[in-house]
Length: 111
Image 1: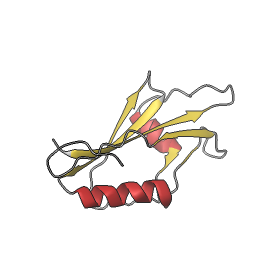
Image 2: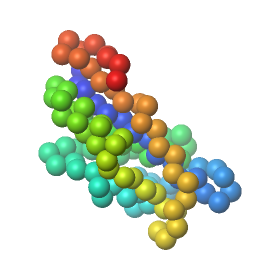
Image 3: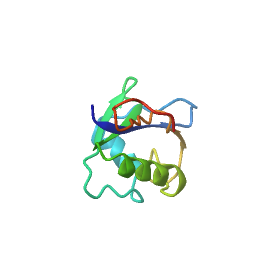
């Protein structure tokens, strides 16, 4: 099994509920991942939870150190923001807990 990172994002609107995205492209258009370095990677974007959650999944194959470095940058260095109308930042819910990390034997390990 490949090693992957999975990040989930919701934008909370003025009515305190998660906004519903029209499609993946609309969701990506409301999110700013410009600080993320996807060089050599192929992130996959999907919607979940009745189209209220943007999911970004990045496959690292067997390169655990690249995966670890990427995740450390996401949580410590690279900012992510989201905006419902392109000008004001709504509350952004970020879930970094869905990180999957495997050891050399394919066993899940704690991070």
